Length: 336
Image 1 (cartoon, one colour):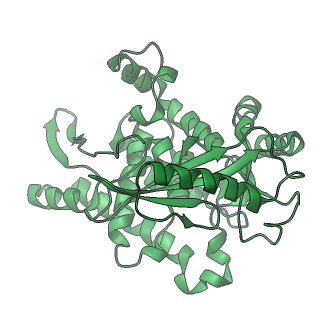
Image 2 (cartoon, rainbow, N blue to C red):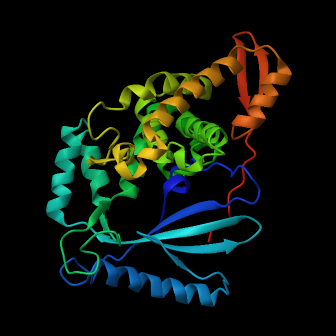
């Protein structure tokens, strides 16, 4: 069992409303005894589902499990509301791993990084596939841990800052500190942008740019800036340059043939105008943060910070001019 998504990356943002839920993504990798030639995706998914059902009953969780396309969802009601989505998987076959390493290197990644992240590639269940209940080699590839390691490689561009974080936490090196505790400028920028997007699309949640696109483009644009303000300026200025004009529009860094923006051109989602809304969001984010940065009205700054950002921001005067001082107040659900 391993964490995925924003909890693994350290980019969780608080829900807009107290009644809204956190989304905790987990992976369940069965490493031995199950292959594409011995089990169907459906059999694997229901093996994991049976185990989760035992867990639900043993813990006295009243809400029934819900089957999603790729995962099982389990609802928690605690001092914080959240649901847990668990995706079953098996290790990816060695030949496909080699193909993925070659594709990642061809797309510009260092061979050492590609070989490291592809160790975690897996094959997941998806009940939308025609082969879902058949013995078949046609399984979808997923590599959430590999993506997390790629994201960490982008954070490491600010290694001097991360080493200071490690010293503050009294650990010998950065690798001894979980990535969620690195508190890097890149992580904070992603949190800020996700919060801004959530506010902007609070009345149109189906149309908002998805988090994996914002996270990937932010990581690609980030160049190791040592403070949040400089990193935010860099990311907002450059992230649009990493949207390709041809498919894949926003490639998965650890599976370059996968397009994180595949719904943009999907006829089933045409009515949502997803690509247009991404560019609309980016334009608005640039304008909003420029107006906050240039303002000298303290009330306006406080209002915008509380409305649009994940934490309260205050402005202070220093010899270098106006700068932002960040105060962290977010809470996370307790570990399960």
